[in-house]
Length: 136
Image (cartoon, rainbow, N blue to C red; front, side, top):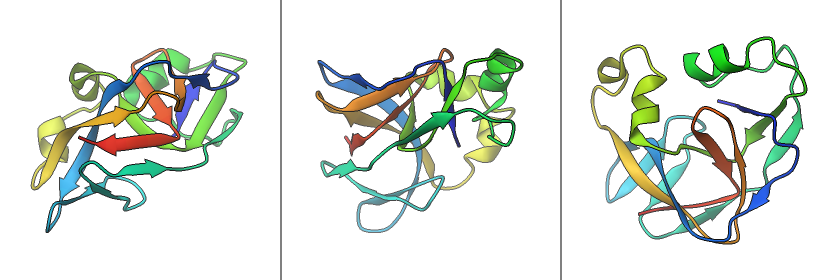
């Protein structure tokens, strides 16, 4: 999943931001991300260096919502590395053809925290990528 954005540089958060991710419940309180098999444990901050560059035709869109919004637009950037999330639970459902089928099993929508001082990129459709995130 890549975030497509018109944002050239990251914004530094002045306050904490609650966001949402789809995670798979594992054993012993561990949750797993849908991409890259990242393990999440409640209350533990995760950090990563983000990767931001000019958008090119080989980049993939996150879902049909951002594809329709950004299709044929110019001066775009992509953030491929970082912790991806949704700004609302409503945005999660808007982006998938059949969320119930995709989340069959142990998948759950979990609240996450992007702490104050984190670097973030936003898109225009309700997606965000950050260099720091905590499972609440």
